[in-house]
Image (cartoon, rainbow, N blue to C red):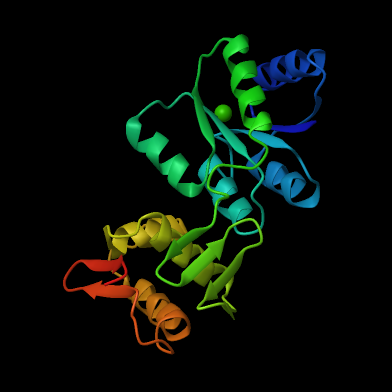
Length: 222
Ligand code: CA
């Protein structure tokens, strides 16, 4: 089993590497988000232990970019224990969350549980009406017909399906899909949603993504 640790504090990184190596894992350590992302994309790991507060690319950004390409399980390691952060990490597709400081035995238990699970959480097919996303293959079909989406359109659709029946504000969508804070220019969201709907909704009678006036959008089978 190959693990990747992305951690900028050398002491913590070395300590985790030593402990996990002693338990039979093959471990690589990256000191920055950019290095970690590069390694994660280039090579196949069974699990990634990802620190949130990293210089340059932070853990959120690493995860968001990783999820555009891969579903490698991710365990977030962080000193930030606010509920919002936890929710954000899980929404972005983290599989578990461990708050520092933690006992090594607890980490080991989480690592084992995640590896045992085999496939990452969120790997199950998601569907609404006759539209389906297979997150492992990154394949989208509607009525059995394959949809060809860009990476952003896919990320947007995945968000809609994960949060279906919830009204999502433009700001929330912008943060989740573009990892940016749009104060005014949420037009970007409207444009992207329009393009997505042109592909997944326009050719079909039953519409799945609906505008909610003055708020944003909701995905549901009506
Ligand atoms: Ca850190």
